[in-house]
Amino acid sequence: VYSFTTLNLSTVNEKDNMRLKIYPNPANNYINIESDEEISQVTIINSVGQLVGQYNINEEKTFRIYVDSISSGNYYILFKLKNNDYLKKLIIEK
Image 1 (cartoon, rainbow, N blue to C red):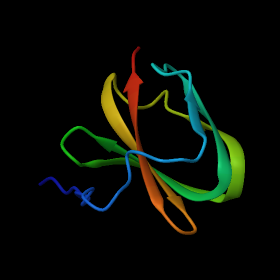
Image 2 (tube, rainbow, N blue to C red; image 1 turned 180 degrees about the horizontal axis):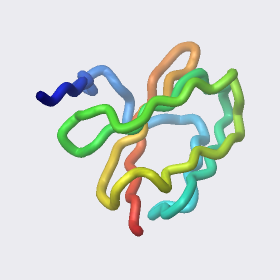
Image 3 (cartoon, rainbow, N blue to C red; image 1 turned 180 degrees about the vertical axis):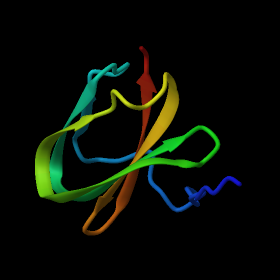
């Protein structure tokens, strides 16, 4: 028996005017994230919309997430901020 969660990404901004930096991308072991705004949650989603990882962030602007347990592939990162959600692409290469 398999269980998974899919997310509706139709209400998320891919274009934005804020500075949201993810590096390195492609990533191997970790990603660094820098933002102009405080982030409350980060969600990593695979290419078919399945939840891969979810991280609660304490309203930080700069932090690191370890992705060494995630398989190689193309992913999306959903950032939850106070007034908006943003979506960025992420490549993981092992």
